Picture: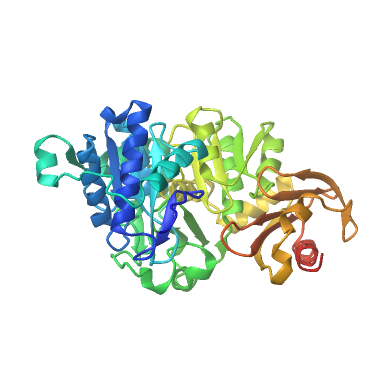
Length: 474
């Protein structure tokens, strides 16, 4: 019997191993029981899914279990991006949303992501309650499903199309006319995911010249994880690089909550830099004002932008749920994390790769500069920052005791004096010269994730070597 465990973004598992119809029914019942305990079950639940194998089938099974508990399911009529599901949840004032997605994970994964009524990813106290309930239910028939035709007759199964309301929201947040008026050609890559018919349609309907690839359903995602990172979008980078008429490349991941940006010359632009560029753009060009929130692993280039404009940065643990809280409370202008998650004030408290891509397109259109030029200008105004992440695999005895050693570092590493140690999420060392490194230990494998940041590429190379030596050599 596999224990059901909710991680940073819900419960995920490998299909036919831990992720089975039976476990889906158990988790669905646990969520139904949680909502009843909270006294909100009568508000119904939005049920959605991404483009993965059997996503629709899992979602229908969840709807049967919800109906068996007397809870209405607002069922998305097609595979739907995570931010669109979040928007539908808020629009309908539902009790929550159950979204079948494994986001950027490989094709053989699926997952359940639960969002409570406030619209963001569930916080740890919520997922812990659901997890406890689910594991207590294992090994017994704990649910009573209702056939969907009966559920529909009783008003417990309602099909919805959340796209139109989401499109209307986006049109209020992005200057689509400016993008169209710029005359630039944009390449779009939904990576065979649920972003198909969203980013491309919004741009096309606005009159933008676009070319789209990987825009059909493929549960194998073309043989790559549906992650818009440089390592997985070589075909897209080549397309942009080899077509001089393309000004910008925009990609989204499997459930369209993450973004990947390619400049006109085929250069992949790190999400860290995109977050800072957009923060600066919103204040400098749009005239908006407000603070930013970023995860502990995200670039301090955002901090440099904040200092330049006289605003603040709030640091959170890794996990967009913590940034979503600030958005929901209207405390920040923009929130983002280094793993390509972003949202802005007035929008859903959830990552939105579609919105991020459109904001980048607006920025390029309004500034009439490519991203390389915009980044160079930002460096000129706030100072250069270079960032990197790598995984360090631990062998033998290294895996034991590494967490304690990371929390108690020496006074300096490689001659760099440690000014401050932050243990908000992992162990982050801030050095007196302004550089920093962060170590986060994986909870599922003997791996330490090393993040580093410095003011020059050469110094970043040295910093990353020091971090690797510190972990692997003691």
